[in-house]
Image 1: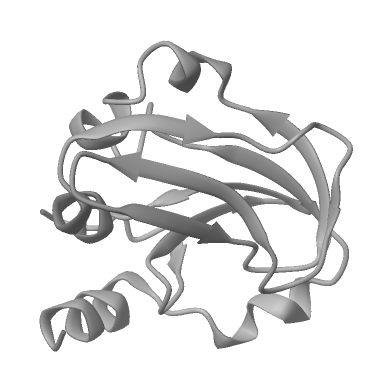
Image 2: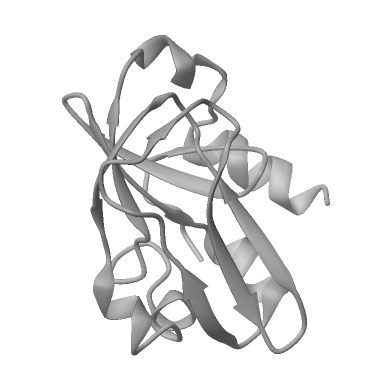
Length: 127
């Protein structure tokens, strides 16, 4: 799969689509493939304040449970409520409809260690 070039990526396999100081966050195609069929997503509450590295959501599959980490400090301003009834959307559209949450970022410098699409692809291929 080609990773969207306008996104940023973490070594924890999250993608970040930044628009101004808001970031839509999900897990990468690589992560969903490793997890297998996703059966449940635990979403954070809107208004939750998080620090970079905090566990903000949990994705459960038939094989494993994966944590979703905040790529930056901020406040949860939106969640993808559709995942409550259709968690498998993360498998079928991980970089589009399978987004998990929206975060209002406190400090954009938190994203300086994120990877571009080419860097992430290289990192994921090395695992």
